[in-house]
Length: 637
Ligand SMILES: Cc1cc2nc3c(=O)[nH]c(=O)nc-3n(C[C@H](O)[C@H](O)[C@H](O)COP(=O)(O)OP(=O)(O)OC[C@H]3O[C@@H](n4cnc5c(N)ncnc54)[C@H](O)[C@@H]3O)c2cc1C
Image: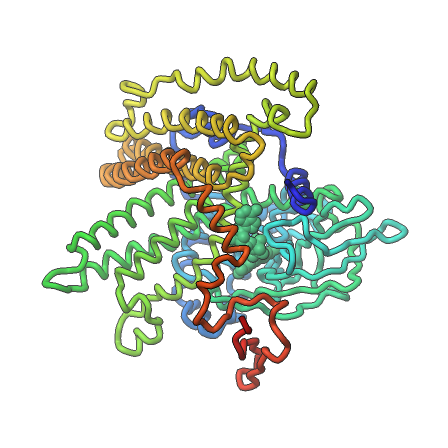
């Protein structure tokens, strides 16, 4: 049974989906069992460096090295005004804004090189610049704004008018159907009156401009607006603070009867969520690049420390356990960079629908980055857990792995949590099947409709299914990939198996497939691994073809990466049908119902919901100057 709330959430998500696939999509075809090598090979060459970009990049590098102290930014929890001013003077707030609107007009790949540089140095600055131009005002205006809106706002943004994106609300996180912010049209229709609360708006305390999502009656659809924070009724209610990204200018915002002129509506009324989704297609590409920068920093740190640190008679890097980690970090860093560059190139080239590749790059890279930061902390031992200031006080090099760890965890949550990224990709993975056979498995369809659907499905699958078995994925295909050819052939074979598995999933689970998240998520994991393998094999071949001096080393990294990836893929395929999903779900539901609450005895009981907290349980700590909510007494059990 799907309850009303769930049905509404699905309806809103479906309404915001781009239903048409007007352009080529490598991953969509992969899910359908077609390995479209022509879409990705040859792997994009390194573009020649444009002088305008080169000079900016060098200036930024010098600026970071001489004027930005990431440790102080982390400790004070503030962006120094001179850093923001310096970035603005350089044009860093207008990197992706076209030159005719006063920006630097960088390509996605150029922008990503900057994100990688920043990601290797200061995550707070990465978030500031990325929230502004990946999801803030510039990106949706570039894609959906009127000429007038572009002329009005883009030059301001390029000069340094900081912007943010306000979608999340206290009760509306991953599920935008529950948004309550309301923008009611005025009687004369010339404006909207905006009321509501937005949570965790990055850049919210500094922003001059916001993209705000709100419901617009009478249709009640969600619309997107440019809102100026100087307008009457816009209030920063409080600044939010986090385990990492300490300087993030993140705010809870309130809107009280804010008059938003109709000219500030972005795109079509009621289509705001779709605008947000399309904006995020390219917007999501910042994180894959920034995390690549961060893991490259990890690689350098691990290489140097594993050589320098001697324990048990030899450098720790020579002990097999650490050597293996080093190899993994190097191979994965190479793969992450290959994935980020390939996705960015697709965005630059145009002609691709990159919604799946961007989601895969975001999800795959942020998870790999988290694992690598964790391994780096392990390799640094106790020093990995120590703050930079404490290391420096003892005369050691202040290497901030603990800061990096605090800063990087949220990458798996914002701009689409891991689960939501999987769901998003899974929905598209089964799209074609739903289009062909959806009516067959829909319990609400009448017998006559099912009959029509059955005939259509038969006609389609009679051709499609056998061809998912037939395919040449053995020698000599892809032999130009040399030592990596077996891996490329594996991708081709595995993509057909993936498509067959999804088809079987439809047959076995029918309408219940959409609830089989474990099954669907494994198929998404397989597709992401195959995408990463495609990126690394293609990149190595391109390096070999071009006579790149490091091509042979890259080939070794790619080989190691693909071997491991193939084992991951094989394990995921096995787990599709041999698993504990039903038992695990049942126990999860038992936990939910409190059947295992007995296990929670003997603890202080911090996991209470707001409703369970009594007013007396809040204590103030005036000394800190901040109101701290702590729990003073355990709840009675
Ligand atoms: C530092 C920071 C900065 C942020 N910046 C911004 C910003 O600039 N603008 C903005 O609008 N928002 C911002 N956010 C909000 C962010 O996008 C949300 O935190 C994110 O979308 C998840 O929403 P939530 O935290 O409410 O989690 P929930 O939606 O409550 O989810 C909780 C958990 O349940 C999982 N879950 C939810 N639904 C499903 C499902 N159907 N199936 C399986 N699992 C599910 C989630 O993946 C998550 O693990 C920011 C958040 C943080 C922490």
